[in-house]
Length: 292
Ligand code: NDP
Image 1: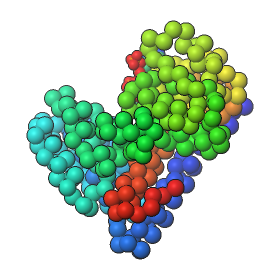
Image 2: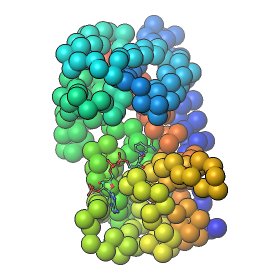
Image 3: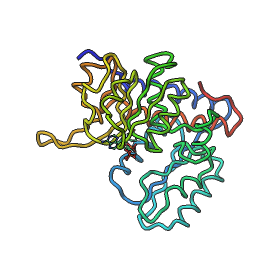
């Protein structure tokens, strides 16, 4: 293996440490404790794990965590009333509604009911528009984490060819906007892309956000490229459950210049960025300078 392994776990620990120090200063100097409210509707086991982990990390960073668990059959009106109350609550700086929502609830309607200033996931239509026009916004956590690791590895991204495989609103599209904002030449690929292998081979930066285990093999990677693997796929191998990404790690690591592992790459950065966004929201709400 020749690629440098980008250690998302260590990088995320650094981000969390910086957030915790800033929170401690906010408390000491201004008496402010940032607060994050997480809303979970129903009992999806993966979502419950994510919500628990977000709550724990929030408290570890010195912030207040407010968990709201609602029954799977909660009505849209009840959920919207809770969001309205959280929007008005000055102790709550960030609101996150865990997705996916049960089918009877309209996720777009619910997300767009969140005060954009408290939308720490960055999914509200106002934040999407602000990001797309290069204005100050709340940036979705997973792509933000990828961008931070890329900037750290490359310094400037200007002029690099970036290929993002996947065009979801949560990962692919905002990732592409962020890379464009850093002056990459960006291609967004998806399930209808012709000759995906050739498109990927052009990339100096290859971001995989597909949701298909080990779909991208090493011979799709340009020698020396940076590979960011967003995928989290649970597979059965040798009678055991294993987490793998959207790239075939062993073969890609032979060719790439740098690569994020799964687990321990993008995943830990997502929660770290959620904490960073909550801190940013608290600073903005109180008219204080934002953390770097
Ligand atoms: P979505 O299912 O919403 O989007 C997947 C995208 O991949 C779509 O745009 C789809 O194209 C494209 N795609 C699917 N199959 C192919 C194919 N054969 N060739 C090319 N493109 C294809 O997924 P998400 O964006 O929500 O998530 C992507 C992955 O990232 C998942 O593994 C998910 O678990 C992981 N994830 C990880 C996070 C983290 O914290 N690390 C956070 C969020 C997600 P089309 O639009 O044409 O259908």
